[in-house]
Image (tube, rainbow over all chains, first blue to last red; front, side):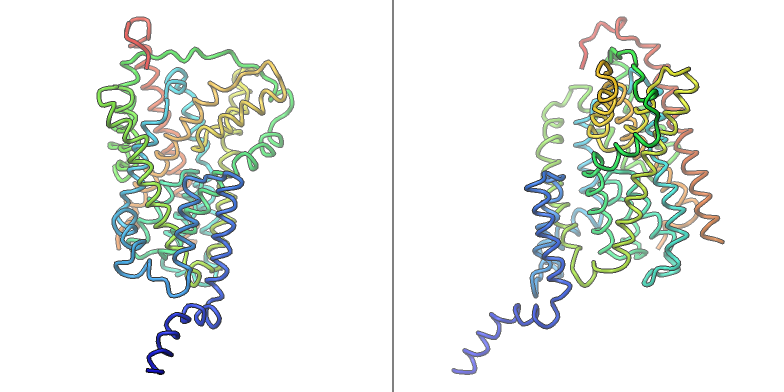
Length: 399
Length: 46
């Protein structure tokens, strides 16, 4: 009887015993979860994603938690939606149905800013390839895949990062825990774009350039062009980079449903219920990968450091093209709009508008910036698709 | 050295491919919007 009581009490205190003896990493991650809660709730930093990620992190780091064990609730969510890349793709349908491409279609040349804004992906890839061989714990055989996963943060697009990195996790080329670190880094830096970009904008442009007033864009586009756009983009992606077709196909499906107005129920569901449920489960499952023992590695620090570099170079790339355009146009193009060529929509466009108006209160760059920003959305997915196509060609997408 | 070659390949082919592909898409959109201007459509705007 006494032994039974002691065993019962022992079972109730096993968690505390674990924390006291082996729980250091878990305690650190519980603190990280609390910081993420604070950022999501009090500071409004990407709360839709950060709050479920933080809660998943909280759940998995509680002592003796079984949520990420076989048949655990977060493991089940991971298997049904992350392991097979379903949730990021469903979120893309929602993003496509929420995005208005009219400013881009009214001024298609702005799409080139969306390409320049991806420079961070490829420059960071090169940097990561040079740094990773010296980082302890990185398998030399998988350096390329690890570097590509980190570089994907430069897409400035959470679902793309998760899609690409999880592809390598599924092939056993990177740790599953690294997908969580990459996702958190990607969403954190997306939220920090208003802090990261303005100093770079001011550093890379002169006052005269920032004050350039651009003519207003009417933004009128025919319904035919609106409907043809998602079909053309999907077709070109399929022909040039079929490995990225799921990414581009889903975002364009969402947009196609929106512009045709033929299936309003599906469009509404994509924007709301489908995107919301997918976001919740994706966030929880990603948080579930942040188990202390797996997460607290030098690699995680590297992910955050190189992720910052990637977003910075993206902005530099866009601004450089903006400056080239300024010179070519004889000073008619405000180079600030180049900074909007990233995927953080509509945040980057609003920043450009605010920055432009700060230097010239009669300046309204919003429509130009919105065009470049939606170009950045297409550009980030296209860059990821092309990267996957090249990796496939180099035989790096096989187990 | 092999990593450097891979990185440079990705930078040139990846970034170059992205620029070229989006240039192609932009050119096609330009053609599309010229072929179907809003005034000729007489359809309600989205």
